[in-house]
Length: 443
Image (cartoon, rainbow, N blue to C red; front, top):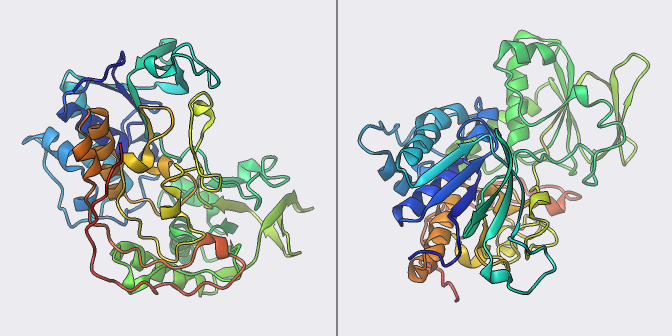
């Protein structure tokens, strides 16, 4: 069924979820344009290409997308765990090429969306709003343009918007001033050129999640060849857990937690708990000094690595009517399912168009961006999101409502909202049998 408004379905982002959305739309005969600000498919994934994923190949390939790739594509070993770079090379890049080859899907690289609105309507105007197509303001290689769309799926992710070192959500005083010595995300310490920056240095690592654990493990390897390397681990809570360990059905995540715990317990790491950074300053020797709200100070810091999570960039959506949770900045209906303040375990039941629909009819958030500031997004969840959303856009309400998926138990306990209290230690969730959920989509 074609959409009554002018224009194609526009998908923002050519990452794993955006490309899966395009594949599902193509399968339903919908014209699609994918807008990606990077130069290639999965450009954000490529920025952490050295990191190995927790999920095996079997959970990283959308089945509809796999069918589109055809017989010429050699499927990877479904039990293997790829790195981000392998995910791009073995799946995302071939998928983007296959989509472009269909003739009904345009994949435009180097196109950055700067705003989404209704044509001729700002946020305030009611009159005729739903009868107008979306107008996407785009900066591309040939300049700026406006692209009309019948529907929009924003799957642009959150990678470009890391949380700051400052503990109250804003950059701490001095954080920007000394930004040349602060890295956000996971540097590739296996790259000799990158490793030189940190080898033999005093490195402060802020964050407690899987990304921070990856950094600790990498610094532990670096210290084996550069023994003067030392780490101050800045933990906002009174303690830090390491995930579900052997109880985590994401086996690689459980293994990472155990490796990180081993490094954190070694002489390499000085763990500073209840450390909430309030200032970054330069000491007389030119090295950095980090101050905490509780009076702690870490001196003599050469480099800082900030891995405190990400947040959605909502600036491009200022003229779109959204209903977002005031805490997580995720769709309001989805928020209770993913709020780390209230969930002791990270499992989220599968969801789709019903939970992700916005007051602006035809506009959806999907993928990591749909989670707002919540962590622990699984690719499988995103595949199911866009399957349901595209079905709804195509008018197949029955399929959109039939959201069925088996997700692994996370095995991770304790929410970020309890950072003033000691963690429960992880693994409390055990490893129960997975459940199959079928949701109802009201319309």
